[in-house]
Length: 440
Image (cartoon, rainbow, N blue to C red; front, side):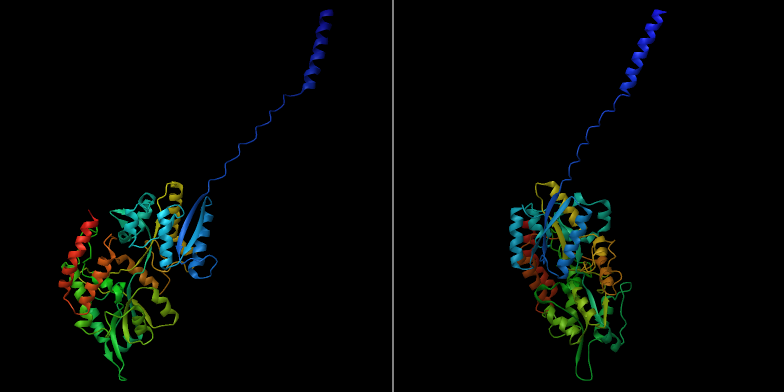
């Protein structure tokens, strides 16, 4: 009995003790490890014609482009450095590229691309291209953006050259307009130009066709490719403008004035301002071979305008040519900066940017997916011409030869001073020597 009482006392004392203690306390969780702030990569973007705070179209669209890019890529900060389209801008750009410390992306010209690539300034584009990118760009776009088989720039757009027509003169003479689906052959083009060359009752002389040709203006270049010839082989190692395909096309261009007499008296020597005035103000020329920039001026003035393809030759399809817009990335030790700059270049040359920013696209893009000009009655046709582009690969041939001397040789033919074959054979000697030198 005593043992039972003792046991009950022990139980009675222990149970309240446990009851007083309650359940075991929950451990306080450790504070979470703070997430490190994302790394910000800053890149410097040299943009021609940009003036901070200005209200011109180029500056406004550049600001918007960078704003949208940074919003989509918050870990990349872009500083814009504006430089003018002058020798002063060239000097500032060259100094920055020489230092390679405060520049990551810039507009590069096809003339300077080989030099910069050879000096190791440029970052190769190919590793940053997706399979979709490679399939989207027109193959001809890589010709002008490459050096020795490697791509060193992102193609932006091209000032594709077409023929601008005064539809009032066409109606006056009863000449039907060709189309890109059914372009004129060279012979049909000549016949039309001859019919469009006439003298009105008041004595006004109207001419069929002209183009700027002073100092090697690009306007007449597409005609030189219509028979399938080129100046250089695609690898840039051999001069071939003295071959039959190029020579015959040069003769065709020359014949317009010397043989068929369908050009004005200053055909082959007039500068761009002069030929534009003949076409726009004087209305004494029915067709003007032109870059697309002039279209906006004509459209704003309600000019009776149509955009026509370059006539076809032995190549069997229309041809275009023109100046390229290119973005290049500087190859710096910080590979995060290089990658960020390539991402910006891809955005600036893509199709989406033209959809989001009104007025951004000033010329036809070089991506097949770029349909931003499809709704424009004139530029849609210029954009259609891009698929027929023929372009020469950039080389390190000195400007004195590839521009000054070669253009002089062309002009000597256009003005009837030399035969096409003779002039091209003569320039072939120094041109090929220069090519052999730079391709050692």
